[in-house]
Length: 250
Image 1: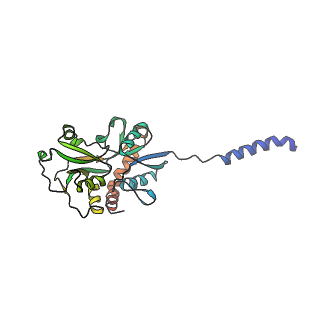
Image 2: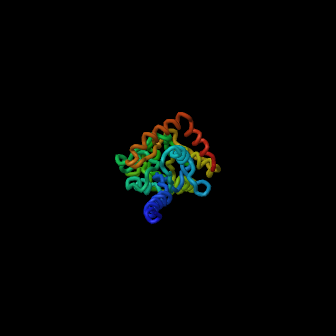
Image 3: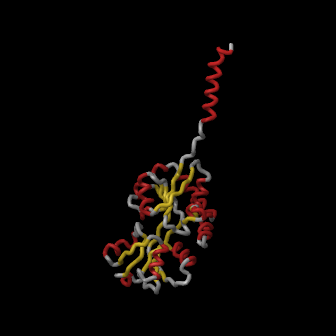
């Protein structure tokens, strides 16, 4: 009797062992490329290199409700965009007008209004002719559609910097005559690093666009959920509070 039952028990034991040793299936990863050098208050490295800022705070809250593991990768602006086309990254912070191939990406609901200004260390004249021939500090790999014609014609002379901090640092050290920068980033830098200096900006914004999240097309089904979450974050004041909080020095 024992010998006859042995094959049955052996099979049962095998199935039981197989059931218990099967690893739990990992949640699929969602990889977000965030810019380095950093761009506070939007995204920057906090304690232990943990991503902080309006964008990580928004994404952390959204993905807490989704069946995906959120992963951040620090990346420069150019490689972040190329990585999106290649499928290396699933999302990054981009506006359609800033990209090389907008038709190949999905763009979320606007997270923030993005307004760029020209800054200088002396009062600026709003007349375009007054800017002719001036040097302007810009971030390397960034596309500046509003002033591209002036750059191409040589009316503005481009000098590349690695970060917004470098742009202002070069400006105060007379390495360029103008800097082109987002208003929130500029305010953060003035408050936290350049409070001893006086900056002037043009009255009119040089450009306005909507700051969005660019997604790889494979996330078509996720996009409506993300869009709804962003709309609700605006309605409840989540984004406004996050912006105010991260405008302070981390």
